[in-house]
Image (cartoon, rainbow, N blue to C red):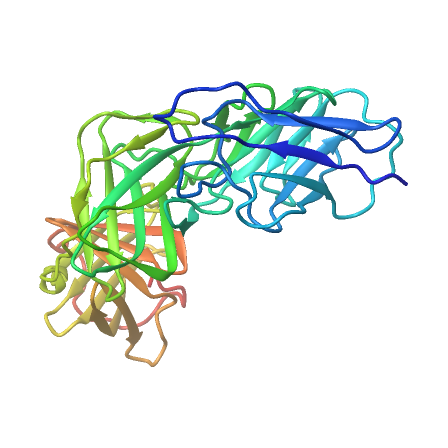
Length: 398
């Protein structure tokens, strides 16, 4: 058994900084095994420090494919804030040489795969990211390296959107991002191990929202606070929409129609703006609504919903039958979040965050950001009954 160490160094600055040569640390760990790993450029990042330089976090994990397609878990051995350090295998790896190509993927995911024949990596872009002060958070990037034992350079896969907010002691809990053309933002991906280009795997149910969370909340001041969201490189031809939520559940929605290009390893900044939550949206959910999209596509079933000013909800649905079913609920709505209980005592299956924009209303499951329902203000069809005689199915949409 031999314990193999990979030494990695990242000497980087923010995008505006000038390029410099790659620093590579070479360490021979035995008479017949040695590995050298560096970063492709000053724009390569795992996490930033306050000076805009890359740092590691304690216990960072990477996937290593060495001489086989086995996904080996390796662990960073330094401390948070280190710019130079070592990684080593979690479990002892039986190998006497590291000849041939080696592939390294950050962060470690148990389901990450490497196809040696195509030199591609299969992994997943998560729909949720974690806030880090003046940086993208731990695991807020994917990096890959492919090469021989003396030629390994980690490359960024993501680009980033930098959102700068000011505010009067507002505490930001989350920022959600969607593309105005319904662009896919998360899900299973294929990455070219050599050049770090990435593409989403085909799916009938694409994830179209990214959310940046802060469990503790981020208190805004008169000086801009930066929030970074890692994005698979792509172009938003019709712009983006971001929704910011504070600790009280109040929200602000900001959209841009300008074309936005997210490029690999680059940060795209937005002009700083003040977070001013809309506290007048509680009455706007009142009315009759028709389900237009569910999980990003037009549903194969039909749902209408009526909400009174007392938050009494009537749900009409045709899901498993051609016959309309009607369910009545009492809902609790506060600061942009709604939950409810049917009149038979059954609770709704989820609590939803609500965003209203004119005649469009979006409900997002607070526990599953992929469960997004888009409703449009509408009149009830004439054929819908106003009272229920029986329930055809026990499956309820809410």
